[in-house]
Length: 118
Ligand code: 5GP
Ligand code: ZN
Image 1 (cartoon, protein in one colour):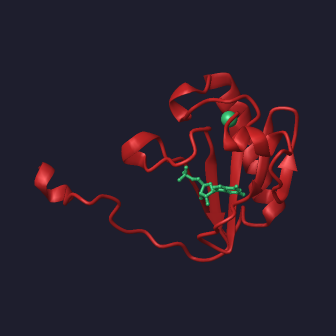
Image 2: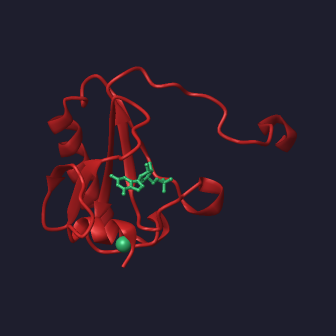
Image 3: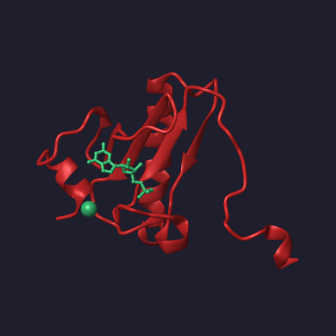
């Protein structure tokens, strides 16, 4: 069982934000912004590549509700999913980071210079 499946099953404790029959939201153990919450489906999918469209639609609604509950839906926030090797995904259970609570930085993402590709 993967790390996040263990969190869903309460084998590893977490600071829960919201839960329903299909999804689980909890605070990231190493927050990168004043608000940093992880949202996961209770069914294991390795990454965003694998989630069915219908479940993704429901997950979008769940994340909108999480943002409202956290009080950041009007001030703004960012949703991020790291996918695979180049995406920097560390935990191989699909998750979305919801980050906010302060003005977020926006910078270069890649080690490579984008200009080299044009
Ligand atoms: P990734 O790099 O895979 O997109 O993000 C994994 C995230 O999971 C990281 O932000 C990391 O801080 C978080 N994380 C890793 N282990 C745990 C844990 O045991 N509990 C919680 N709450 N977050 C974790
Ligand atoms: Zn899992």
